[in-house]
Image 1: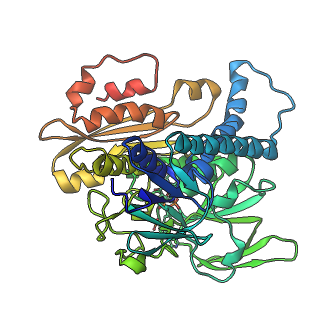
Image 2 (image 1 turned 180 degrees about the vertical axis):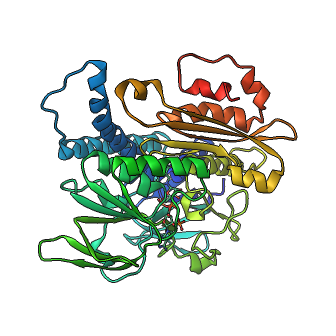
Length: 450
Ligand code: NDP
């Protein structure tokens, strides 16, 4: 490797993509440094997927303890302590942060706990004033919550702050109808908040199959979550008692204790010095890259949310791995396949999907076959919980290939991870039919579609 540079690779951002790329590049023999201005682990580990999933687990006990009655359990004096859950989640986040840091040091990656700015060709300057040169630069700075512009928006929180609340709000308004809004609606609802979701459009979870979205909406309404559609903020005003007076379009002003905004995320590119070497960005502020994650500047690459391709952790990890293998691993450069990426929404109940929705399949394939399994899981029957699951399979009628699978129901993401392998591999409905069911399970519905 070229010794005229301090490092072979300098990574900006130690999140999922940056950590994977740095450690793999180092394992391939590169001299690597990474700069992280906040905490090693990035959004997913520190204030995203991981602590969110722990809160989802915590929230689920509300229903599980209720359901336990019909299974013979008497639970007296049950109560919920938010501060205890919050602090144990944060303790585990710190543990994981430590492990991520250890992974980097075990691979001899130098970590600078400060902000890095590109200040010239192959050159980075740290907040401390230290100037570093690198043969390659990888930008993996992720994204941050986008807060729309309206009077009083300084009073709202985002998911970043939701993990650190002093108390569970009695009344919470969540703006947005996407992943974060629906996941946190389920969490706060289970902890006893009166939850209202307000979205600018008439839908939730755009991009997911209409049937599963409708089912989540119905179930959420039954649980007491309120939805306001075609609603945007006109203003938020802080009142003397600390509560927030919120005016949404077309509605009377209402009072909430907390307003949380979950209206998408924007790439973190500010102050990176991209202009100093002419790195091109797109309309949404994303760093524009080719299939190999290379920018228009040949030694600068970018992976993960800052490129706004698919804003999911496992995708960023794949991109980081592909970059490191391709540039430092001595293999033929390879691109990440962004098609047929399975995903999940950890709502109550969760949604999971892979491949095309029914609408997309109709538009692109012409003739399709659609199979439904609409059932009440055995556990819900016995517990008296009137909550039905829905599984849906979309098949290309021309060749029997499964092109989409959509599920809402308990453990849907766990089931989907395995089923997605089959869909990605191009298996047919006949292949599923030929597989014997495991009885009694919910997942057996996947091989029993009629
Ligand atoms: P989403 O993209 O999921 O949803 C954004 C929501 O905000 C939509 O309902 C959208 O409306 C609305 N919206 C968008 N722009 C505006 C605006 N300018 N003003 C008002 N409303 C607006 O974003 P999230 O913030 O929920 O999550 C960000 C990303 O993080 C997700 O896209 C996902 O990639 C990732 N994520 C993944 C999770 C998972 O894998 N389980 C969990 C959490 C986040 P409309 O209905 O019109 O589209």
